[in-house]
Structure formats: structure tokens, C-alpha cells
Length: 403
Image (tube, rainbow, N blue to C red; front, side, top):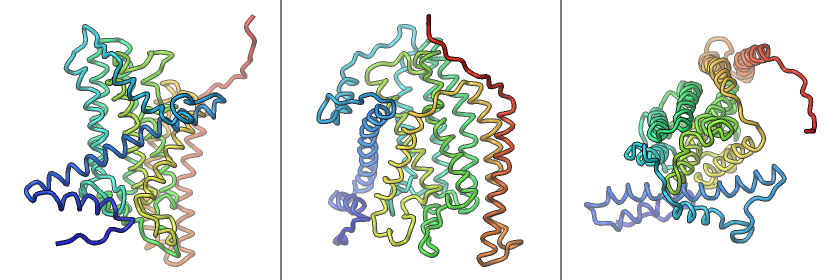
């Protein structure tokens, strides 16, 4: 038995099959699992190091200051220096802390963050575990991160860490609801919870243009709401209240140092990559190209290209928007995000059933369906936005120099 010749699109699948093929038959299932796990850890841990460097460089440019520029040419070795520093710093644990839970919290957080990649289709035939309920598995695993955050805050026996943990739980639970609801619209249209099947549904072309869900009114609105909720779920600015330095110093991981702190830092970025990957899968066609004449580009390149674009958006938002207050954060979640996701689901339902009932077929039916679904989304957006603005008392600011 010989393996077929590898192609650029399936090169990584071929390498995995080649390694498994040269493993003794009793150990081949274990070898296949180890290859997949090792690939996920190495690729996304390396992407974490690259993203931290790009973020520090990018924020430096946005804020008119220098980023890392001393370690290696143009500071490109700064991630290695940070890793060495984290490994060599002293690990300090409070005397009154629950040592077992304090030790397990960062491990649980990192493990749960990496497990989410099991159902993400990174490329064609590149899904680690092709579950029929992949979307459900992703959100179920994501709930373990909330448990890890609470473990870290409670076990530290520190009022600032506990307050940060409670802030994080309130924020993550509040924004997890619109995150899931915005995904339900995709599940309704695709008719499946399988992430691979959702990508296959979008990897079709009409007149050379892909059927990405983001190209629909409900898909565009759902994608924006999904990414806003994802920003809050990953505690990224402007939703980084659990780590508010001005009020609670460093939040739920204030009592962590050395490598344990580095694990929290790693988990935040790994979780950001994972939820961005799910957004790509649900709304941006996953590994598929936007137009048919670019389908020759390997599918995994498309996935990571979209992922880097979303990462740049996260960095841009962090360098642009100020941190919200806690009341603003909760009002935005329950008074705007939640109702909007419900209207997105309504718009998706109309999109599914309108052609057969009112709009008919052909170009006119498609235009009518598009306009109706857009109106269902835009009207509540304007109404809810005005309702949030009406309760605010904005006064003119006066800037004075200190005397």
C-alpha cells in the first residue's frame, strides 16, 4: 500500500497520514491523535507569539511610541525573551490560598481553550474531530473557561481577585447569550450543527461568488454581533473590565506570577483565536475562497488569512476604543445585543421561507427578500440605539490645565 502524491491543499493531511502509515499498526490510532494534538499546539502557540509581537508593534504605532525594538532585528525575538522571562520568574503563591485550586486554574483554562479547536475545520479535510454537534461542543467547552476564571479568583483569597472573577463571570455569562443566539441563525439556515457541514454549505458558488452567510443581511448583522460578543467573551478591550488596572489592579489573576501568569496570557489569546475561527466557520465560509477563480489557493491559507485579518481588527479595536464602565457593559449586553440577536434570528427565518411564499423566484424575488430581511435588522437597530442614547446625559467637557 502506498500513499497518493501530496497536493498543496492536502499537504498537511498527507504528512499526518505518512507519519501514521510508518507507525506500527497497534499504535496508529494513538499516533494519529498525537499528530493532530501536536500540530494544533505548535501552530497556535506559534501564532500566539507572533500575535503578541504584532500587537505590541501595532499599538506602538497607533499611540505614537516605540514597540519592542531591542531584542533581535526590529525586536522580532521579543516573544522568545518574554517566554524565557516567564519561565525563570519566581512563582509566588499566597499563604492563605487554596494551593490545589490555585495551581489547577490556569491549566484548566489553557486545556479548555485548546479543546475548542477539535471541531474547527482549519482546511479541507482538516477537522480534528468531525462531530455532528460541533457547534454545541464548542460552546460546551467554552463554558469551562468561566469555571477556570472563578477558580483563579476564589482560590487566591484576595478581594481584588475575587471581584475580578465575579466581574468576569457576569460579563462572560451576559455576552455568551448573544454569542450563541447569533450562531443559531447560521444553524437554522444550514440545517446542521456540524462545523464541517456549515462550511460545505457556504463553499458553493453562483456566478463565481461564494454563498458566504456574511453576504446576507442577517449574516452581516449576526457576524458583527458575534464578533462584539466574542470580544467581550475573551476579555479584550474595550471589554477588559475583569482586568481593570485602575480599580482592581489586575483582576482574577492578580496573585499569579511567573509561568502561571504566562498561561493565563496564553489562554486569552488561544481563546481569541478559537472564537475567531468559529466566526470564520459560521459566517466567512471557513476555508473556502470568496470567489471561484481563487479556489486554487490552498484551503488552509484561506483560513489563516481570515484569522490574521480578524486578529488585526482585535488589535485595532484595542488601540482605538476606551474601556467601558460596568453599567455600560451590562446595559449594552441586555438592552441592545440580546434583542438584536433575536431580530437576526427572525430575519434568518424570513430569509429561509420568503422565496417560497411571497418573493417568488428569479432576480426580483432575491431583491425583495434581501430588502425585507435588511429592514427587519435595521429598524430595531435604529430603535434600540436611540433608546440607549436617550437615557444618557452628555454634558460639554471643559479641559483645564493644573495650577
